[in-house]
Image (spheres, rainbow, N blue to C red):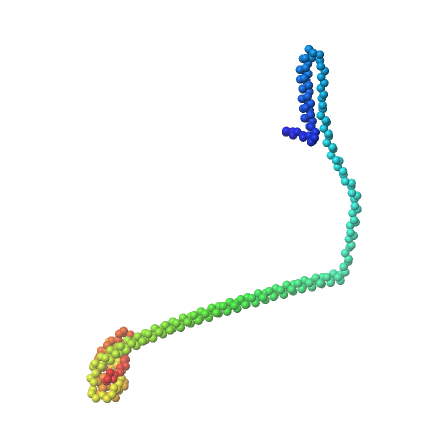
Length: 264
């Protein structure tokens, strides 16, 4: 490990420096002595005086101040421990009273807990009933709305059905009227009108026919009041057999009621 040279205090030379200076001076004196020593053999020696100066001795550092031990403190006397008083004796009556009070307290706490529990259960039940009632009302409203919707749909369907039925009936009535018109036209073509028919009386006949249109019977249901005209119509009906067929076939009727007037 390299030693770090000590620094001399400010204002004075270090011991090593002084020793070096002293060594230089000694060597210088020795060289001078050798030079002048040769001449000293030829010449009388000249006395030479060399003054040597030694550096002042370094002052010693003052010793560190001595540690002063604190004076021992006098021990304080510890206070005596407090005197523990023995617990007062409790009589049996006091013990019984305390036990009774403790039981009463526990009983009251138990009753309070049970009351609180009952109240919570009652409130819970009320909330459940309220929720159930609200749900029932909600479902009832839904059912009512569904019933109204179903009724409206039923009425709409019924109106559509009635309209379709009426349209079908109207179409059937028109087709049947056309069918009767074709039969009546054929029969009128075969009537031989008698002379001197007063007014425009109506004769009504019921005609029975087969699906082929062949006439079975022609019966007078209402007389026109003019017998020759009634007989002329009856002969024309029988002459018109077979009658025109129904188109479509569903329009066929076995018994037909036919009305005739002389001026139609």
